[in-house]
Image (cartoon, rainbow, N blue to C red):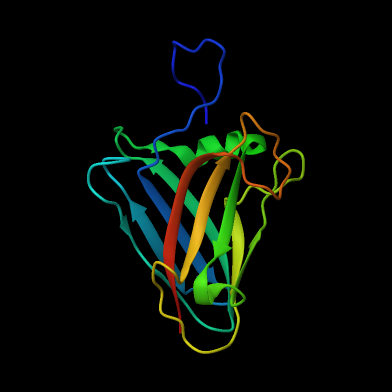
Length: 172
């Protein structure tokens, strides 16, 4: 994320404030859309964020996208566009946890200029099986790594994380 601090003329990158994250999934072959929203209007600290759950169908595949906003500014700052323009320095990691591991597969479909994954666009496949109730443990961990001091290789997270959220996922 672009450095907006004039006291750092070196132009290093800094973490942006991300107060809202919206995951949107569209079930392939249908017009069914499911969304989950992370909302933390005061940023880190203060009031705890609210995190919505995703509900997907067993045996279905979805096309997904993620949107990032800083709503402390008016109008809201579109961090999604910034991540896209700085794709070589960013990558999302989607990690199914708990009962979702082995049941949910996330495949990143967009690439940066070096043909490495970015993760603003992806697919989600939920395999057939018993229903799963989303919770803190049955969740999809979504983390945005920022590669400023380390080199992006497409497989390993950076020590710098712009945002990390556990979205509960229900499988019906």
